View 1 (cartoon, rainbow, N blue to C red):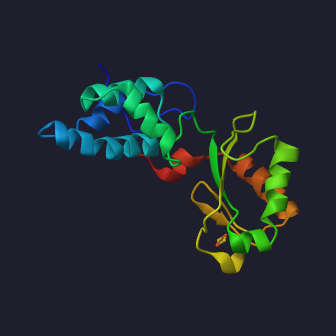
View 2: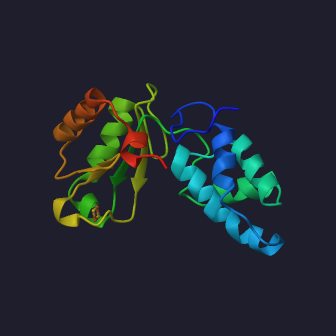
Length: 182
Ligand code: FES
């Protein structure tokens, strides 16, 4: 058996050996404690891979003594979890009050018109997964804001937004690189 590595593919299958390795750090003493650890375990897996697959959910269910239905219920209930793979780059587009006032709607529209992607979706070329955030990313004085992978892009116009996306694509990298793995 090969040793599980920290690198995981952005697309396709989740390496269940890595899931088991992550879960091996969760050692509940009893059933009650196992139930309390479910969300943390899912968060770690989601953070590591960018999503949680049905197969990974089954492994979690088995490890923590619950049903995969219950796990899938949690995955669909909490907005932070994804049940489909992320694109190469992960974008949070702020649509909070300040960003909205400064024109974030135009950026949302541009994503839809030019890139064919809406909230929660991934572009057809797999470059970007987009999450539109109605909260605030905490840098309102530089609105409107997009956070792509680990970087903030500020005072965006439709033009600078498009230029940014092209630059990000040209530079390669991705959220996994930015995230740094475990
Ligand atoms: S509302 Fe967008 S950063 Fe605050």
